[in-house]
Amino acid sequence: MTIPAPLSPDAPKSRRPVSLRPLAALLPRLRPYAGRLAVCAVCLLVAAAVGLAFPQVVRHLLDAAFQQRDRALLDRIAIGLVLAFALQGAMNFVQVFLLTGTSERVVARLREDVFAHLVRLSPSFYTERRTGELTSRLSADLAVLQTLLGSWVSELSRQSLFLVGGIILLTLTHPRLTTTTLAVVPIVVGSALFFGRRLRRASTGVQDRVAEAMGMADEAFSQIRTVQGFVREGEETRRYHRLLSGVVAAAIARARMRALLFGVVGFVAFAGVVAVLWQGGRLVLEGALTPGALVSFLLYAITVAAAVGSLASLFGSYQEAVGAAQRVFELLAMQPTVAEPRTPTPLAKPVRGALALDHVHFRYAPELVDALADVTFAIAPGEVVALVGPSGAGKTTVASLIPRFWDVTDGRITLDGVDIRELSFADLRGAIGLVPQEPALFSGTVRDNIAYARPDAAERDVLAAARAAHAMEFIERLPDGLDTLVGERGVKLSGGQRQRIALARVFLKNPALVVLDEATSSLDNESERLVEIAMEELLRGRSTLIIAHRLRTVRRADRVLVLDHGRVVESGTHEELVAAGGVYGRLYRAELRD
Image (cartoon, rainbow, N blue to C red; front, side):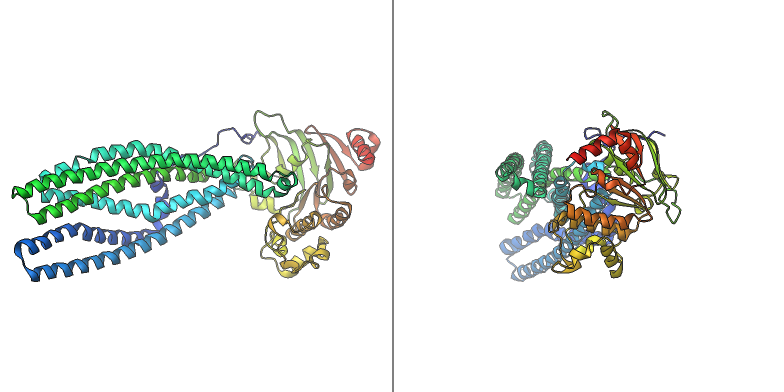
């Protein structure tokens, strides 16, 4: 059975269609909050109605003061205005409070969904991207969407109501002046469309450059010892400066577009107001319009002009949000190159740990040569098999294929007779204990790192695992014992201590199959001795694949396989292979000389 090869870094990704409309993409996430949003809509309508009624009230107030000279009517109108604005303030408070809270919840859930999706993508995805770029999408891009939900939607709705309501009331007040007012609308809309598209491209460029700068900074921080060890602080700072210069240049280009949009729209909109004021003044002089009617019309004209200008500005903000939304939903559309089966085959319990590679071929990309070619071997339950060979022979590739971090290009791998592609990740990876050359520790406590395999493990089980890994002798000397913080990536611990915590984690997991990927190759002699004692305990009664660079670590193996150029070229015990004088014999003699 042939399985498609993993994607190369330059290969096109398999994606679902990505919506470029943030509101359309976010709509399903807003449905659970439909009740809150309905209340927001009602509050917005009431507040907008008060705002649209204000010019009419001003009209009557002025006419009462200057034409009717009715003091009682003037007082009633003034009190009514105060009460109306109090109502408007209350409606604005409720609407802003509910909408802001809703946007916080929606974006938090979206951020959680993006993170949950990212941690389920295959390791090949992370070979193509910097983690800083992904962090930027989780933070900066989603912050743009949060602004879109928290204020943009509200302002869009408010200004749309002011525009439509203002035009209707303008027409009712004086149709002739309305024509003059609306003459500027096509110019404003055309300007918004022209500059808006360019603003979206400029905004996407800024976001991409920010992500690149964050990726570079994250890489420098994660390799800080190398940076300082080679005295490259100055060069790294200069690299970051160059990237930030690109961010600034892109941001200035975006600011230029935004300024042009605001400047043109603002000028055109308020030039229309001047035209209305001039024409209305002539009508007052001719006696065709009362001063109160002119003022109310002018207020409506200003409302319409401000609404048009605001909508143009909001269109520019929307174009910026489109870029952020596209980047976020692109991540959600990414499909893992290694996927779980839709109907997985259950793995019989207890797991025996019988592993078999059957004519396995593998290549990292279609255009590359096979990293493994026709590899066939089996590990019986409880058997310890060592896999050795020169650098680049494909040993670590085998270790990555067993838990399906990658999928074979051809052939198959079985666990207890079941093709691992038919197993759920929980069954497959739950049955395997991995001990890598560089153990991965998190920045919590020693206890947290050991219990990572079983977060619900009892204290006695964590202690038993630490003792089995011969880790208690240094844990008891730590300032807070199991509660000692290990620092980012375990930086406060030595290599041997980190390795024994990794072994304790596997002890706690209690897997049927253990894969040791050069677990002692980077340790000093004393640390290696302690780790090997712990490994002796770990391997007892378990199926084990030892991937070794130092050949003296494979003496405990029942059988040794020699991998060279992706093929198994020798098989036998340590003594048999030394006597045969082949690849293994040459490697062994070279190690003895060293």
